[in-house]
Length: 401
Length: 199
Image 1 (tube, chains in turn yellow, brown):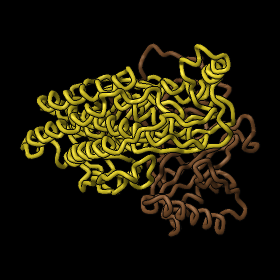
Image 2 (cartoon, helix red, strand yellow):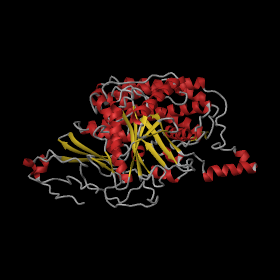
Image 3 (tube, rainbow over the protein chains, first blue to last red):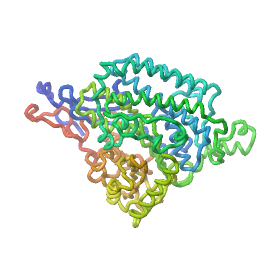
Image 4 (spheres, rainbow over the protein chains, first blue to last red):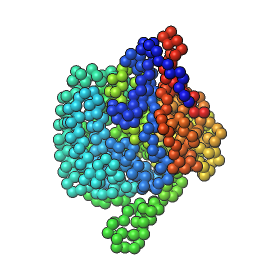
């Protein structure tokens, strides 16, 4: 396919049909996203998104790796909230195997998911503000992201790509001082949120740049099936944590935040409030987390103690079986969704028995969001597109898989 | 919604499905106890999606996902691919899965005219499995390059078979037409107006 005649004349200067390419590696896209726009002056009249620049065939790899091996690939989906993906995936496989994690494990998982939600929202709000020139917000919030990552590091030894969850449990129990640190985090982080709110919420420049910009209204949001904060910003009261509860969420007290306009400003407000709600959940988890076993007592998935592996023959064989051969998942299928930071993150696994999945489908929220972005960016200005793109928080890793 | 109410709601859904829709269709439950309804064929799947959206017992108003899987081993019938629609109701918080078998030389029906969000999802299926969707407005590859050959998620596609391209694709506006103002341009177009698409 070759381009047609590429003739440039003086008339192009007055062309109402100028094509403008944004991305695939533009600093304001935060990932390899490509938006091709037809602009008239500064107004985007038509847009087409090109994706796939980070396509690594993760779904195909899911069919060729064992269930345990594939855990590391989930980190690389939404790399800013890897914990959330790990746990959602572990939950999907556990549902296939009819395993319910222990209560302590469930609490740890909820703590991890809410921490990663905070991190994800911090990134979104901070980067969005940074794109629009408000750098202070970035420094204020990233301090707390750093603190959250340090906590995660103490939990599982890694910061970004955590691989913390295991099918049937977690790779490590919480370190001794974590709950204490978590409490301190919950106490002090809202102060930073207050400061951010003081800087942005009633800031004239911020309001001018965000209110009425990048609107995805209720009708469009439902039509394009977006989920998460962007759907709630459009005024749809939907949160899987409350509507289709999993783990210990029914026992925890939190509010679902709903906006009305579906613009960048609403999405910013929603993310701020969701961080507060997450902190509320974290505080309750801190108080309620029980002692007790971390792992389910199920021979199919239980990874033996390291000490026993070194000293006992049978345990060594069992360890080898789990890691060299993989766990045996019975035939069947399940579609398990969690409320990820950006929306409904689902794993649809079709198993035909054996240690590898027959079909590993990742339903990523970013994919639907970018599709809606393609539609809603039309009619806005080019700088508005940057604000819009920052506020829907699309991750290329999750988008392209 | 508490757990008991939830199970009750799911039971109601299964009952209604059994009574109204499952007479000559296969109804199953998956490992999460969610209903899976097998459409008779691809056209039937679209009819089912439509009627679920109108049925007051379900109030399906949200598309969770459209995907497909390869049925190379013939476990799910003779046809080669299974297209899967994941439907959700924002009001009743229930999920229904509709499945339709599609053979290699058959095409599925697009639902992007009912739910526009299916547009990219169907493009993805077309890209990775090679299933065509009748009536789709813009059926092009989405993940892979437009010049790519083969469909990577088919079981026979080798995991390490790669296809590199030295240059980027031409600049164009996807399936959208360039609205050219002929008075100003006199027939001259900058860039490539429309791709041939993947045929």
